[in-house]
Length: 256
Image (cartoon, rainbow, N blue to C red; front, side, top):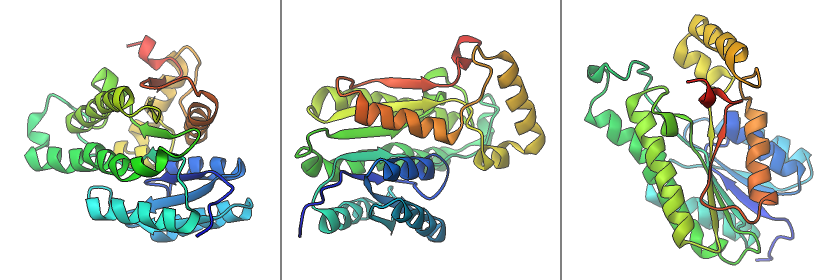
């Protein structure tokens, strides 16, 4: 097995949205990419083709990050293919849409356990599997894709907000203890796209987007490409930064 001359990243949940945008951006910067998905393997393979057309190598792996064996297999396939690992981007996540956090009957214990298993346990398992390889990089990185929900206690559901709060705390704990591996989180606000439109419904989505564009200091709602840019800047250009949770919301947190 020859070691790749290109840096290598694993992006969980890389078939669409932020994961897809990040994979394409990293590929344009010369990174080889493993993208994982749970069910949308065709979408993941399309991302791989786009990355390959940018002149790098890429592969898609069907993997549920809540399954520790799948996490280990993903890392194993990456190392067998390229002989190195420089960055892990924990982007895979899930929720149950229940926007009224006061309606405790909208969720049950099983909802919490499922969401935590993907959003918290999954990133932990991926970091655990990657650590022994990341440590050999000259710029080892973990980026956790969190949410403003974990900071402000808002978002798609109480369980989701709680899971992202846990992910933010885990980010800081890992950063304190895993050096020289840098561990940071990005915390987007309202992200424009079909995932949120589907969860809110078109009318509520359009109203929320208009409100954000009218009231936030920067007058905009974040896009997946902007999140990807922030991820890249944090992992590649901010070599002194670790243990941070970076809000990406156009200043929305200043208005509520």
